[in-house]
Length: 245
Image (cartoon, rainbow, N blue to C red):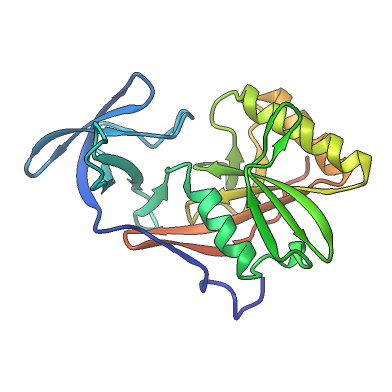
């Protein structure tokens, strides 16, 4: 990413966020919280553990939908994490990586993906679907996007919970790369400012870590990019180096 591109790709948030205090998470997708106006229940679309983030009393930021058909108008977007260098926001909405990647790809923000000028969402492949198919003079490139919210020992890590679906995606991308007809890439959207490199969370999902190493060796492009989560939008940042796999 060039200096002129860094920070210019921004995914705006729809409307002002509501701040609240986290109380509990239950049934995987539900969050109870306290606002100044009283208690609320919000939807969380993140299926991971959000390890180290959802502590009682933590400040969270919620978007508000104006769709009258929604049972819960609030969606968990960010968690405020205290740090000795200063508190920061961590983006936890798992729709963000796809939306941000699409904006970045159309803006030419990824030098590793030069030569593709069209972005098609959710192409069918291998009995399921991947997130994107890029096409252009460079040919075709299948892309899967993942959200990263965990940092341990200076490394941004994925996954934060064992993921059968994530392992399946790596298998499909590796097969694509080995066939040599199309390109394959995986975009890790790191929605927090700390962490100096990216690594698979082998302690949490050793099979995923092994499959990522296979994917890299097969030629899958591994693209860990930082994204700054702010109350007004998510800003695409620079690429992080890979830790040795």
